[in-house]
Image 1 (cartoon, one colour):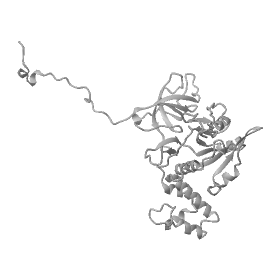
Image 2 (tube, rainbow, N blue to C red; image 1 turned 120 degrees about the vertical axis):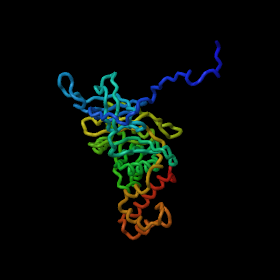
Image 3 (spheres, rainbow, N blue to C red; image 1 turned 60 degrees about the horizontal axis):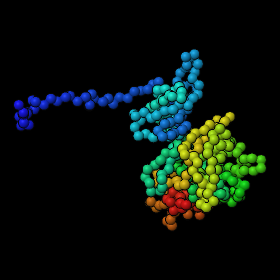
Length: 351
C-alpha cells in the first residue's frame, strides 16, 4: 500500500543521536611540562626553523646529551592567531631530534623582551611584527648608488626608539662618496655609526662593525641595493645571502632577501638578523610621546605645552625651553632633530 505524507507522524521518524557536540569540550590544556625550549631562526610558509640548545630534550640511547640542532616545527592549534617571528623564544613538543623527516609543534611563546614592528603605511592600523627579542637596530644606507634617503633613516630611528632598541647607523659605499657631511646631520641625535667601503685591501670597516655586534641580537634593515646582504655575507661567510644590483634608471635595488633569518656570528657571541629590503616603513602604531622620551634634555619642556601639542607648532613651549638654555648648548639642533623625527612619524617628510 502506498502511504501518503499525511499518513506519517512523529512516531514514524527515527532520530539518530548526534555525536557532534555530545561531549562537552574541556577548557583545560595540556601543561606540556616536557616541552623543549628553542629559538626561532627562520620562518617559511607556516614552517618554523628552531634552534634547540645542546642538552635540551634529554639524552640519547648512549646517555649523552643531545647536541645543538635545528628543528622544523609548526604552530600548535592551541596558540590560535598568535604570530611567531624570527627571534621568538618558544617551547616545543613532538619530534625535537632535528632529523630530516621530523616535525615538532610550538606549544608556547615566551614573553617578548622587545618587538620591532611596522605598518604598511602611515594610515594602516594593522601592525606587522618584523622581529622579536632584538637588542639593536642596524640601519644600513648607501652613500651613493643608490643615493641615501634621510627620511627613511629617520623613520627607522623612530621605530628603534619605539621598540626600545639601540640604533646603529651603517653607511656603505664610502669609496663613492664622503660620509662626514651626511653624518653631521645626525650628530645631535648621538646615534652610533660605522662607515664601510670597498677598498684595495678588501672590505674596510667590517671589523669596526663586528665590535658593535658582540653579545647582541642585531636586526639589519635598509632599502634594496644599499649593500645590506653584502655586509651580512662579510660578517657570516656561510650565510650566502643573495645580493643584487641597482637599476641605472630608477636608482632602486632589487629585493634579494625574501624572508628574515637569524645568523650566528662565527667565533663571536652574537646574532645577526637579516631582513628583506624595504621601500616604505609605516609608523601608524607609534605613540609620539615615546619618541620624545628619547630626548631627556627636551622632554621636561613639554610640561608647558598646550594640550594636544604636536611639538611642531607656534604654540609649542619647547622653543622657549631651548631659548632659556635649559636644554644645553646643543638644544637648538636637538629640537630640530626631534621635530624632524616627528614629521617622519606623521608622514609629512616621507620620501
